[in-house]
Image (cartoon, rainbow, N blue to C red; front, side, top):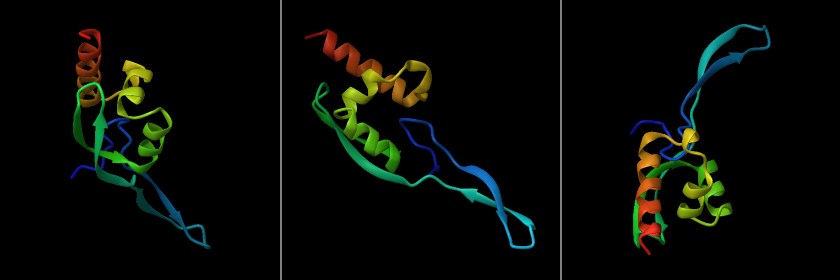
Length: 95
């Protein structure tokens, strides 16, 4: 599984471990990616996604998956999330 959040695009970052003697060795900062199923009220189904736990908190704050997608700018969403947002938008406009 790729260590990338499906909704925000958050991915692995690189840095250094710095010892007491100031010697820097390479390390990775990996996001806490979890496999979750989020309910979309507009689509009426559970959507399985790999998202960071930080993103899950934001989704809950925004009122669910639909609220998060519709409230987020298109430029900030990765392609998979953008397709999901368009699907939700089409379903809501059809009502």
